[in-house]
Image 1 (cartoon, one colour):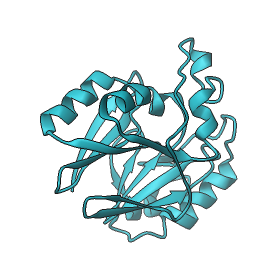
Image 2 (cartoon, helix red, strand yellow):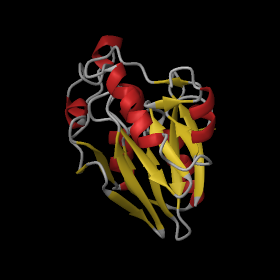
Image 3 (cartoon, one colour):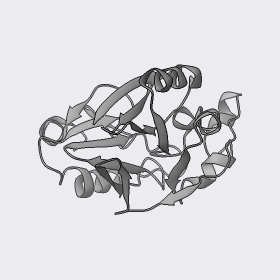
Length: 204
């Protein structure tokens, strides 16, 4: 599996493009700059099967509708964050003066559900704390953590639906139990590993 990383938008949210051996694609958190993402998809000569959203904040959903229209892919999000796609106050874009409104997700995902891409299988981990419906996506030796866990930090919990106690419980119970060498691909900033965060993350 190939993993392509695209920092997008004014605050550099990480959008990930996963490509299977049979040229199926999965996008995680296309938060902005749809033209850049579409160009990358076309250059790779792939089709996008799914757009998976780790949560419903503006910097992770801003390019969803354009990409859904251009690729015909299905949009997946946890049911508790699905309302963020149609409410600019819940996705926080209202407060920045540029409301983002998407259609509802095509599929609602839940803890333990599996998503197949070619020969690859990814498992959904429900990791509330940053938002009520935040999720991580676990594959072979990789985990995509959205705004749940960063290198040396954790997601903010001062937005609606946030809870630091819940976030730390999610991280310790769902992410830190993965194999130590598992590579962490966060929603912002550089990659890290489960072992690195277990040892050195000051929040943990």
